Image: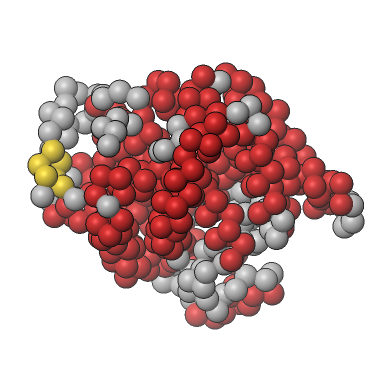
Length: 400
């Protein structure tokens, strides 16, 4: 059994969780929300945040599922299948269930307050039932399945629980590790992976995944799309050719991503403004999205292995605090966005205010209220006694 540790990838997993503060903060100030996200537009919206949102959304969740599959493979190798499943039930399913009755109601409450304030120009901490019915009716008319309970940001813990059921399939596929490793190390790996992603994007509007997955009823196209990243991540542990390729070509992936991302947005724009752009445009759009997503995954993995793959205070703190920050950031963001609706300020300033507020609340609560308590044991399996990373850290953890 390999004893190789991957602190860079562990930190990247944490960074993908923390990037949710930026992504979800940008959602409040979109100038043109996607058709599947018909939120009332904030009066201080800016197209800057449309770019921020689409860029992060292009790779963040797929990269997270790749990393989740990778670390699931490490866990299976170390503990065996059934012990790994029990561990994931304790660390993912249990926090999901607790989050659904604690964090989620707060997030939904403040989101409704925000949407009502933007739509009707009010500023009430208790949503008005009459206005709420009007708002729900408008969302329903726009095609939002308002009758289904929404999991909001907790959706990907829900999907992750389902993907862990694919572990036996991953173990079966990994028996062909030698051949798969040669395939992952091939120059053709990126185009093939991009084609696979493009094929699974076919059911989505505009080739972008903005619909279906936020609700309690599993969305089959989203399961197929995101499930491929989890399975491929599982295979990377036994087939590290892709990791080596990603690390060697960081600057190439950066240049290629700089070309593919605007191309994918441009083709999506053509598709949306032209009722019948034709099959070639749709195929080109899907291929651009698929290739862009995998190029950016190569980029972030390669950068993590190249520059973060070492023990350091920042890597340790990022990897250990990320779970708590991810779980709690949405209520803090929604509350701050609701509070800021009353002020006529530039969108950039509002965005900086709400993300700073959420960051301070989440990190301070983790540092002073969580890391040394049973909450940390519940989320991470151990207590920590970490100093702020810019100070000299203690770098100790008390296992439970």
